[in-house]
Image 1 (tube, rainbow, N blue to C red):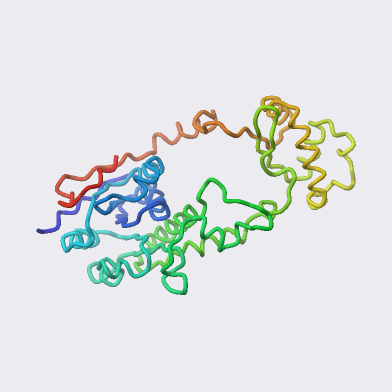
Image 2: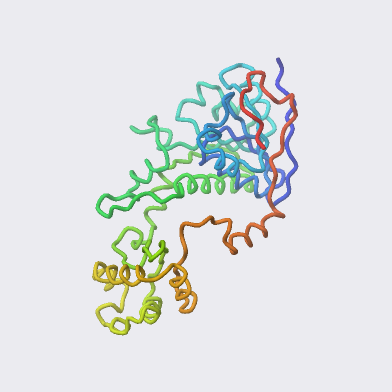
Length: 339
């Protein structure tokens, strides 16, 4: 059985003409190629016969992370499956994969093999811990790297946030590196390590994220809760005026951010008491009147007027998934087409 003819989509954008073969699953790699596709690159997603694992774990995330790509199912454990990838790599500019170290070598879709087919290829490997080292073959997910990088601390009881930021940081970094390589016209191997991305982001995190910060976090109200993100001294003054804390408005003990951190327990106790006596709408009205960074939580983001405005503005730039011809489908395919 011969490999099918390669058909690349003709997208529009600053990366128009860039051809990317995506062998990755879950989120870091697919997010990288989502960014490339949104900028005009043509992306062909290669899925195993059972489909990308994200299809089953989180179908909504899968759809969002793979918009604007073409998708085929290929069994890389077969000679025909490898022929399909080799044929696609011949006319590609870049390949991205997210297997554990050593897997692509066994499947014969590694950098050395594909470089023989296409010497100018950009090859990006995404792995949790890098291609070597004592943990290189260990399994991991986003929260694993948060813990190792020190972003989760038992001392501060700071738990993971809802957004898988290590996955997204790695994907963003990979997309940036691949774009730079393509614009430079230079192929080569990119070793993209999730732990590196986690450490880089954790290193530059604001101390307030992990420190005792009384006016930075979630605060209960009489009928729900709000998020308050108040760090600046000027904002503190406005909060005191809004809540009629006249005794604290000019208190020299609480003038600076560091002073308020030192008195975190006292400040937070008073803030909790004040907001617990107010309805959420009343708190938001105070925030609007006094120009304070206090926001509602617990509602569908898509119902927010600002979110809707931004989504409407992006509609003209969105790419729909491009289905490939039936001849591209592996005879062992069991995964649905990407829509």
